[in-house]
Length: 118
Image 1 (tube, helix red, strand yellow):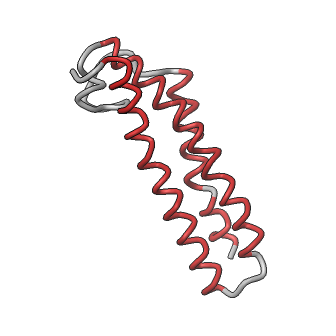
Image 2 (cartoon, one colour):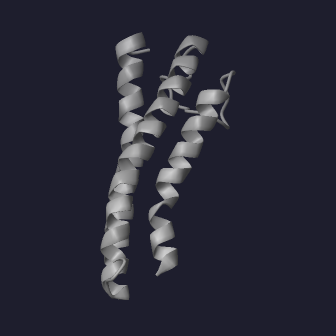
């Protein structure tokens, strides 16, 4: 049961760590390996720098958003059967995954608003 409760916090912690790392040490040069990479973000050095900043900001926001249901679920699964707790954890982790995926369109929208369709 403890591993289930800990798994609820895996995504929020990873998002927080990624957000903090990229906020403190953003990837400086355009590359195909590390950083927020999309056609729009790689169009210029200016758009690259902007995308790295926005991505780190949104990862930190996503960490907080995913932390809330994890904390609530932690109390819910505490006294439940293993099967019920497993379902609750799976649902929360699916919702957390959706939040992760939503970071991309948010960053892309900011890039489009700032730099247009390049």
